[in-house]
Structure formats: structure tokens, C-alpha cells
Length: 269
Image (cartoon, rainbow, N blue to C red):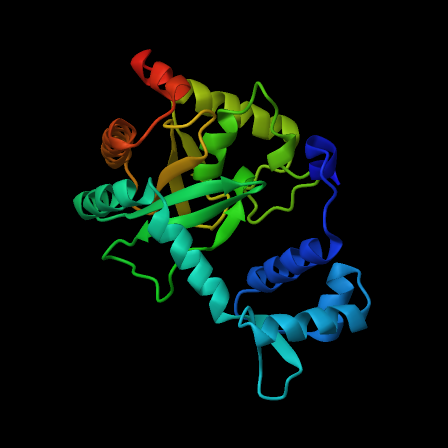
């Protein structure tokens, strides 16, 4: 409805429901859903949801199990996502630089993009010390609790962050900032400091340092470094921040930029 008011173009209900269904299945990751669950979540009649699912199954966007009663995201979604990554003009610049940074620090480095209220992971280079058995690419986390997200929200303080932060924040850990005033204060500090800190706000025992990439205005992309808090000395912290700042500057210099972003970089912002 908001998009209709802004563009004057009436939305197509079936198309909107198709997108909602695919996003719902994608958000469940490896948990298949039954028709009743999907119907309840979408607030739509089972008959219409079933007809939509069957069409999407036929075209490969949704996958049905052997019994035909549980559904998950299909391979066509992967192909679309791969095309998005392959054609992104920034990812090809960022990937080799965060690979080098991860090797230099032997820490896990992320590259993500703001999508409404979430950060979507576009690339991750894992530390050799604690490699995870799954890919983070395509995963999403709330912007308000991640260092990448907070670095980007800090750039939007003057315009307002309501679009990117829910009215009621659900804490992921005891350290998650759930009060709006606390989050605003943290974002103001982030803007002054030049980078954001996730102080065990997503995962207990892990802190992250996030840096907005200012090759667009406002910035939509960021990089971060995830570090176990055990053994994180002040000297190590400074080493990580210095390396992250160098990499951010290198990315911003190499990336295609708009005129407003170029002016910001020239001014040293």
C-alpha cells in the first residue's frame, strides 16, 4: 500500500502474494512448511495459496517433498540469487579485499547490504580458527543488532530510522539494545567514532566492528569483523580497527561512486 501511494501505481495482489510466499519460505531456511502454516502466515485462503504453490512448484521456485505436503524454497531462487551476486558491481571489488583482510587478521570478515530492516550477507571470509560448516551468503539479521546494520543506521539518523527498525525490538541476546533511546545514543556514538560495535548483541561471546561503505548516498553496504571476546585485548582491537579502516578506504576508492558520495570522500567524511 505504501508503494502504491508513493508511485501512484496499483499493486497486483497475486504478484505481491507470490513475493510474500517466496520470502516466507526463504526466511524459514531449512524448515519446510505445510500448507496450513503458509496460509495462516499469509492470512490467505488455503485454496488460493495451494494454487499458487502448485504453480511455483511447476516452475521450480518452490520444492515439494516426496509426500507433496511440505514445501521449501526451490532451485530457481538460487539461480536468481546467483545472478544477482554475479552482476553486482561492488561485490567483485569487495571480495578480494576482504579475502586479503581475513588472511591478514585471521578473523571472519563480512560484507552486507541493508534491505529494509535487515542486513543481508553478500560475502563472508571465515577465519581459519573457527570455520563454520555453512555459508552465510543470503542470510539476514536485524540491522539494529548488527555492527554492519548499525553503521548504516548511523548514517540515516537525520532522515530517521523508523523504516529500518521495528517499533518493538525482539532481543537476540541479553545485550541487544531494545530501547529506542539506547539505540539512538549508540548510533550517535557510532557516527562520532566512525564505526559501529556489536557488543554481543547477536551472539554471546562475539563482538563485531562494522564500517559503512560510503560509495553511495546514503550508504547501503558495510563490512564487519567478527571476533570472539575471549582474548580481545586493547592492542588487538586497535589492530583490527586500523586494518578495517584501511580496507574500507581501499574499497571506497575503487568502487564506482555517485557525485554526492565522491564529495563526502573528498571532504574526508
